[in-house]
Image 1 (cartoon, one colour):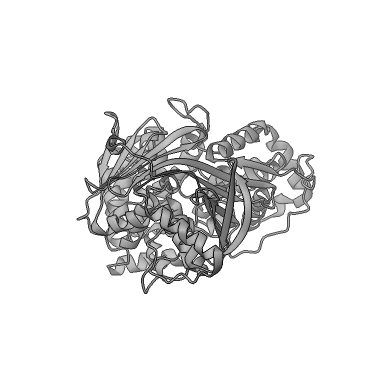
Image 2: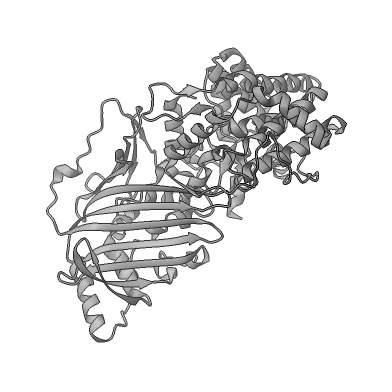
Length: 604
């Protein structure tokens, strides 16, 4: 998949998922992610697709339409804060900055992952809104809501291949726009059981603040809306006003999704209230080399639930065995006390904070580059495993389960960001190779070997600045393509004898189509796609998204359909990207993966 396809898929399909497969509510949340208040998170589109989407966009939710309430204020404080609200409601325009900070950790392996984005926002209640978002000082996107044209535009700026998404703005969208104003955040805070938090100094100004701890005052209207408190914990919304002008100078919201270690904070500051804004500011300039995609509101959401007996069988089989993990039912040996290649895993490691996707990937690549190559230590590792685990006496199942235990240990010690974890993943690969040698035609063993290799080998290497062409890992178009090719040849032979392929066969074949495309083996890529198309009526993958993509792949070189959806993506998952779509990763990552055609189960 080239960079252009990666960008188009991420923007339009949210990790290769066709937006037409989303529910109306999800589409609505998608539009709110592109809100003019600077909360656009399309580059992290997997956030809002998850069951915790309400959490990831809570900063946008709090700006929803303020309900009509009687403010029960008393005393001098009430007079002051009522005056603040009256003032901000009198302004038609507003300019401000938004900062988004997402932090995960510190984790047991010593790492803290964070992202920070900054947006400059311009709002006019009559013209619309315009925002520019920066990451590491670089402009990455521009977002417009144009009330006169009833149009919403998102333009990516941070990549060589520029993209523009255009969406119509409905009457409901206009109402949402007017609700998405900073003044409504203040109204909601003051409608709740807020407390004054004293005075401070911000940007040289004496300020006075209030804080609201109950998130349910921030919920949207509607009888079916669940209280936000059901989804978040450790919530705080704060507003600081200039004591002289009685106008807000700082607002913030911070919370943890329930059961998560991901801290989400959004800050609004550098306010300019009532400043004149030129109409030309809201006239988008779309570069000539920008690829434009228009959303057709007449597109119907395709049915995601099984529609035929074959699809129902396919869904039930997938639900029973969703992962490439045929050995999951077997007990794992304890390898925590095992030391390999002279490294001591008990040595304390300092905590490290990595900011942003690119920094995480660069740190990961630099760390792995310092490891000795697998081939150089393979013989020594095999001798140590013979002496300590008596691997020659282990049967195939025991070899594979020991490899899984070693792989788990690798992740516990920090994975590809650790200086001391590599002996364990090398050992896992070695044991999987031995098992594969003993039973070369067992798909489940090949899956484990592919997983062990992908655990530390990424498809391409991160470089800053981004080169014209990514430096790719030849292991993917070499060994990994050969392994998936072995599985395809085995599948063809079984199909010729009446075998009906399963979800696991589908995943492996989609991997092979991708690998063939990277390898530029178009003939094999289209052959694999044709077999999947031919088997679709019996196998049950006749869902629109799967079949449309497969048919395209059968006719011309193209990327295969996605297989797994990550239902709870955050920056801590970045160390696990740049792999094939079948990559399972550590348990906490794999548990968030959902086979794409089972996504309807999220609403249950």
